[in-house]
Image (cartoon, rainbow, N blue to C red; front, side, top):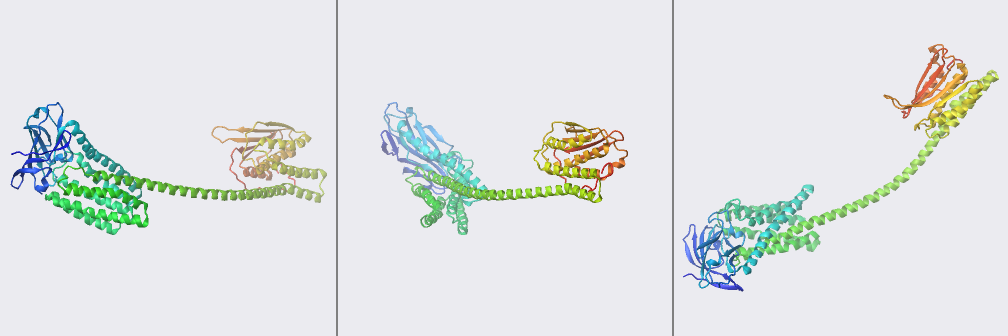
Length: 614
């Protein structure tokens, strides 16, 4: 006789906990009889696959037009559901081990046409089970859709979408931890980056009703992933508190080998107790790591150890609950596992760890930056003091060099002329000769004074000063001067030394015009020249209409050598052209940015020259 028992759980909803079962295990005699739900196949036939039929009775329903359905907290592994002899739902194909209906709760709407209002209706659940897969049947609930469907959805959301959240959080945090490990090779980040994909595989498996591989191969892979995930979390915890030494590494490999052996025994040889032992063994390193972290938190007051104790307390408790209430106890078949959701605390711990270490690094960098700023300020002050002293020394050195230059210019110019004047006096020369040497000494003195005056790179000012000095002497001899000085650009390299050399060079040219040219007119010109293929430069020319030179031999005198030396000293080019009866032209080309070349300047001869070019 078919027996049934209905227990009222809520208004209008019945929990059916008695069924007539027909069990057909492979390799063992078939059995039939009454069972109390939930019925767990692996408890009745450990290590054996098979099929089962569970016959239940649905109570009569009033013809009120209310939609009704069946809510199965857990059923599987593959299932077919019949009401009144009609197939109304199925999950997978019976015997196809790639499907597993136990991964999610099941909601089955029951057509009103199949239900009776005066008598009970037969409900038959056919299942195919594989060993170590926790197949069977939990007590279904029958009632109005408005009452049961919210319960199903709530359980489905917590079980399925909770797994989605865990998988996403592990993926995100694992990628970040992997990137940080790649940057600094810190073991804490490396262990978490390694454990994340194993946890994603384990917790994400419940999202796939159809597995990529058949049973028991896929079950062994998922189970081993859980053990690796948990052991790597232990290594992560030990590394976080600085206790991941040689002993921890050896213990990890020993436990990993033991877990692998138990997984093979459980799934490869169909022994559920091996997988139960593997789960129990995981609590040993978990409790040990928690004890180490608790000691560091209490004794050393290490913040990361305190955070680890707080974050791991709930996952360890959730794992212990899942093991005792779901794995060991048959009465709790169909309950939700809390460990996947509790694992989120490790994700939060990892996020806190990243933020905390980042903030600590930022503070360290800020402190270092402040220290460097202070050192830079001190160094800047030292450099400012050193720069001021250097500027003072530079000014003193420049003043010393300028005094030496002035002394050298007076010695070489005025001094040599006075020595020559004294020599002429001693020889009893005429007043005209003495006057000429005195004027030459006076010109040298004036040029030395003029060279000291600031000109700001204005060559026209230098030429105007020279004109002011020479105009009276030229006018006294009846020579007319044609000044053709254009507007000239600033010559930045026009130093006092350069001014003096230009003055002496031009003065020598004027002196030769006065002494030997027998000219009536002298033309002085200055212009800026910038043609293609040549650098920009300033051109100075002194040309007379005198007698010129009778032969090229006259171009090799001591006076010309002095002029060439002066031109070379300031980086200028000197060109002298002359012809008998056609006058002489002295052309000086000054580059706008000459290279400073300062060879020794030969002193002028003390005595008055007798040749055309002295």
